[in-house]
Amino acid sequence: MMVLYSGTTCPFSQRCRFVLFEKWMDFEIRDVDINNKSENILAMNPYGNVPILVERDLVLYESNIINEYIDERFPHPQLMPADPITRARIRLFLHNFEKELFSQVKILENKNTNHYNTAVTEARTKIKDRLTQLAPILAKNKFLLGDDFSMLDISIAPLLWRLEHYEISLSKNAAPLQKYAERIFSRPAYIESLTPSEKIMRR
Ligand SMILES: N[C@@H](CCC(=O)N[C@@H](CS)C(=O)NCC(=O)O)C(=O)O
Image (cartoon, rainbow, N blue to C red; front, side, top):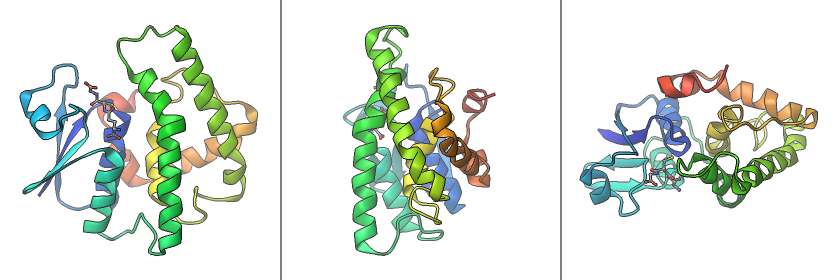
């Protein structure tokens, strides 16, 4: 059985919990206190981060790598399309999300940074601007890739859930993005993937 070591408020861990619940396979989620990491975590991931997925001899870290593995191992419902060109495009998008959005999320997640310093203010603005750029795509499409829900929607969902928590308010131009977020948040697997600490992040 797969075991996911997961942070209860960690957006990267939430991505993996979301994929596991989309597949409805047997798995176990073990909560990790990231402020008080055990030796065990460092033995599994030299970078000391969660999420970590363990299945027999296989130990994986990095949320997007874990998610691609789960998707290949349990292909239904498929979250990465079969066509190599679309798969490559998704991977490029995922890379861009990490560079442009989740690098900023890391600044906001860092417990040691003062919440009102310049880096934090800049991070909020960068996230807001980048998300607003995505809004026109979602005025036309149900999901980021078109009609089909995919790994791209999984990867961005934990950020959309945390906007209020991160004190980021989107402008009116981003209304299609808000509607898109609600579409994701109403999925049964999404609701199941939330921890009690995440449930209270949004009113
Ligand atoms: N790029 C990693 C990021 C994982 C990450 O930053 N996890 C944070 C919690 S949200 C963590 O474990 N931090 C513990 C630490 O840095 O000591 C991924 O996608 O899995």
